[in-house]
Image (cartoon, rainbow, N blue to C red):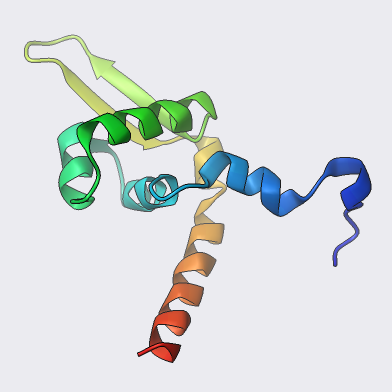
Length: 109
C-alpha cells in the first residue's frame, strides 16, 4: 500500500468510485477524451444509455467539475460537453483502465 492512512482519509478507491462509479460515467468521460461532443453525439456513441440517464450522469459529472457544459444561445439551442482541466487529470487513469480491460478480455476469451 502507499503511504495513505486509510483510517484517517478513508479508502481512496472509494473516493474515486464516488465520483466516477456506476455503469456510465467512465464511459462518458472516455468518449470525451477525443474532444468536445454534443448531447446527441454522446447518446449515439453509447447506444444503451437512455436520454434521461445520460442527462443525469452529465449533470453529476458537471457538478463534480469533471466536465464543462457550454450552452450556445442560438436557435435551435446548441449544448456541448467537454472535459474540464480537472477531468483531464483522469485521462491517465482511463488509459490504465483500458489497458487492463484489454488484458482481461483476452484472458476470458
